[in-house]
Length: 129
Image 1 (cartoon, rainbow, N blue to C red):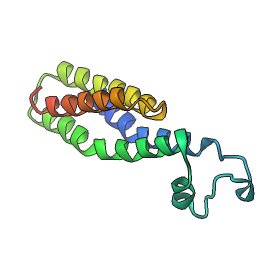
Image 2 (image 1 turned 120 degrees about the vertical axis):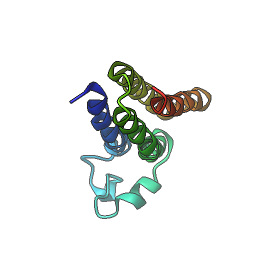
Image 3 (image 1 turned 60 degrees about the vertical axis):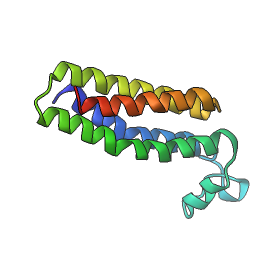
């Protein structure tokens, strides 16, 4: 399995990381005390504010970023492009997405948007690797 294939797995796990961060403040508390409500998790997340709401939004965006990245890696490999370049672009994508998530949670919208654009460019770049 290539480094890029490992990056596919990591990219698929990033939304779960965001979900954990979004729910972390409520884990271990009773529902009646404002703790995480596993009976109605989407409504509970919808009531969150601040960094928890931003972590949940980062989760949604992480899912949205997956199709282009996955397609880019698989297309580049199917076209038998240089694997070292594919691996480098995939690792850069993961690094940028981690920065993006941190910037989203930290409420840094301008830098977050720049990181998002770089991530999209890396995904598109895979098609031309």
